[in-house]
Image 1: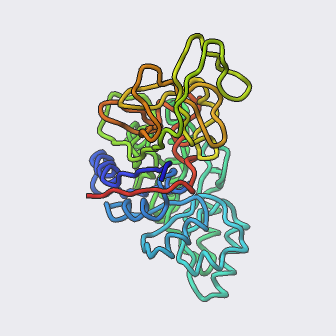
Image 2: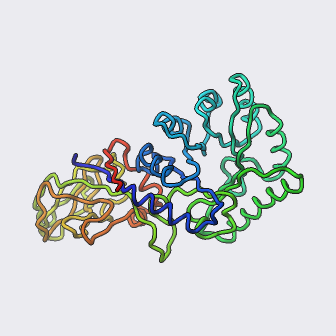
Length: 365
């Protein structure tokens, strides 16, 4: 294997323990494994998250949820995204929990569950400021009662989602909206199901947003998602390749498509057979670094679909040597938060875009 992704399941287990230390003992953890477990590989990663102590798993769509069931993972599974009503039979058959966004969907789900003579599980989503999926907070009590009056539906949770946990003012407004919804339930003597709102950043920043459970994704994989001095979380993924060829480039010679890099002097370059089709962003062209021989070296020229070039001038580097694009080698480290800054994106995108076709090796002691 020339290109490979290594996943340290010990790091994921450790990260879950770190997160749990931040919570009161009764607060549950929903492990978010959507997007192929943020690029880490859905099945093996979800199993590690579940067996390490998560109370529930959350995925993006029904296909991910069914894949986990086929892999014999019996954890409660919440689908955070949209599910076509045509798929409700499969949802109910595999005992998957639906995020409910509107009344029309509730009626269709109830009818399908009735046909199967089964109960469908749902968590109701409230839109407190994300302007994405969810019921409006206004009239939530009335809508909740309408859903709960339907046959064959069990409401097991109610939740919302922060739009920007780094914005304290707006986040506290969202929090207040959600708290008002829950207070309305209390006033109407409605038992409140499991309430959750905080993802990773809010879990660390806003203890008042912990409610009954937190939904942690990024933190499981070793990243806080914000600037912090803390270093308890351990990145779990590394992306590695090998040098395919080494060559000399003369002064004023160009490297790569569109000739975006021109050598100012004689240099030695290494060609690495990994590119943007493998999930390494083209935005890292002429900006990013990689690790060769325990030294950080520059990516030069445009990142190609299946290759990239490195300036290895002054290094022993030869064909076959290991290249670390993400991870560590000796004392040199290069993690996804750094790549995200270079690419002007977030860590979530860097991790989740690593191609699922790349082989993944899992390590767990």
